[in-house]
Image 1 (cartoon, rainbow, N blue to C red):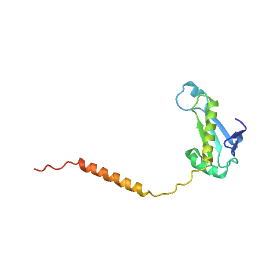
Image 2: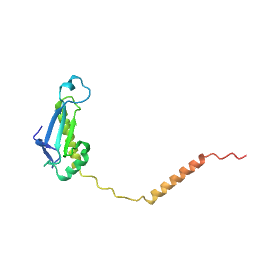
Image 3: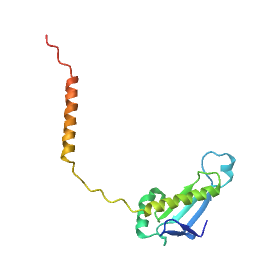
Image 4: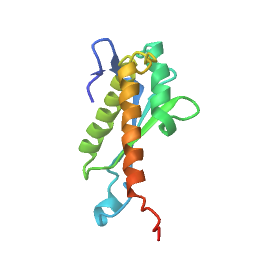
Length: 144
């Protein structure tokens, strides 16, 4: 892992902030799964990281969900691939993507608007036509 991990132009993580643990992967895979610890558990202390601005930290708390512990440590588990190296890269990529998503500003709030007069009239005309079609479908009672 490089000593500095660039995330965005303004955010760069120090490799010392990331803790990797190798564990056995779950699921099928035969002897390879039973013998080799290829899955990676990547831990990143969001609460105490000096690299993150405060607004990114708060948004990361929201986005992380269940992956965040009570102490503010983000845990990402990568076990998609058969090799440790690819799982390490996968976990790091997922962490970077999550931090980038937290760094993007939220969209501006939606302004409530009212429907135009024309759209109201079109809506009511459509409802009237549907009602007429349904009335025409009803059979008239037989009059003898």
